[in-house]
Image 1 (spheres, rainbow, N blue to C red):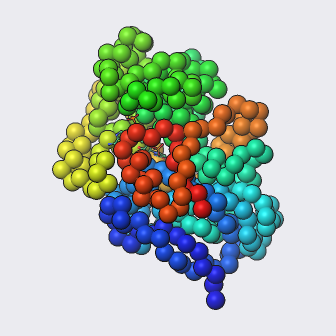
Image 2 (image 1 turned 90 degrees about the vertical axis):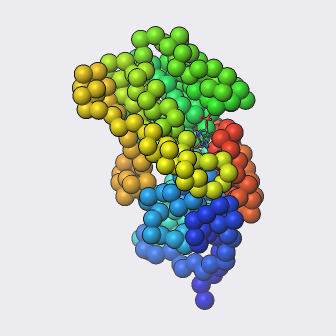
Image 3 (image 1 turned 90 degrees about the horizontal axis):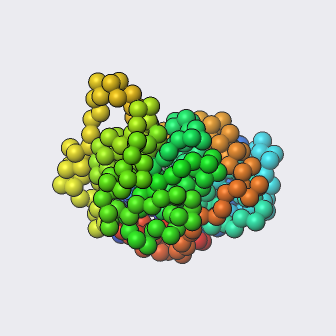
Length: 344
Ligand SMILES: NC(=O)c1ccc[n+]([C@@H]2O[C@H](COP(=O)([O-])OP(=O)(O)OC[C@H]3O[C@@H](n4cnc5c(N)ncnc54)[C@H](OP(=O)(O)O)[C@@H]3O)[C@@H](O)[C@H]2O)c1
């Protein structure tokens, strides 16, 4: 009989009670797979969209175990796996299924846990840093002279963006949604902070940098996209990678709000793009998940920087595995700083 593990399963999308802990069997690792006894799993905003049934990449996959990243100890390796052995500490990325106490993962989405990292750091590293690196260097064509504005600068991806921008020597303005996020954003590397709960984002952004920005990173969606676009300078790039402002803090799908934000989301005119020399780009790494070489190249660079002491740890808040609903509630409140992680 297959051994059992615990998983957090969403049978049917819904509010927090849709997250149910179930005992499920796990097969031995297949060829090319590694079985990991999970110590921690990272929480991402995408997991909320999965729970609510709003994540396109999860359509048709329910009942579904959410979770895109984890860390732990190798239990067993499948046929053909030579780079890992039982007892190795590892961290990894997965296309769902991370909220598990044991997981089988293809070996190419797994990396040795670097010296000095704890499991919480390993489980919260892949999504934020792969996203930040991909945004800045692959899509954004970042140059050291670029003046950059980062929305939600104290969040998971926001903090990773600030770390990588500091490393590259850029001038950075971080926008945050509350006063308590100002210090974390400054510590992560923002040269200027705009607290949008207390001041007008765009008036302050113009005061700081009147000629406009070379790069703006926006995962809010309708609430800021048009302002972001109009504050690019000629040759500026707007990177869109999320729509957090469409979500509600109630933990439920708020259809009128979703509809309102959908209708308010700007449709950029090709005539404006050409006459103003601006670029609008979007991406979602979940749809690039099979591009293994891309992920591995980026991770190699990130781990190299970390080994040189160039990537400071990100603030992490831990929750026991059983308190996943509380973790989702906190992330949906919009008040969290850095990353959230479940520990097993
Ligand atoms: N495209 C991709 O490949 C990719 C990969 C990873 C993440 N993402 C996206 O990147 C964004 C950040 O992800 P994350 O996991 O690191 O989350 P996070 O930034 O730690 O948390 C989300 C932040 O969004 C802001 N926000 C704005 N409107 C909100 C609302 N209605 N409800 C809750 N929060 C709201 C809040 O910050 P402020 O109030 O300070 O602005 C909040 O702290 C998300 O939109 C996510 O979907 C995209």
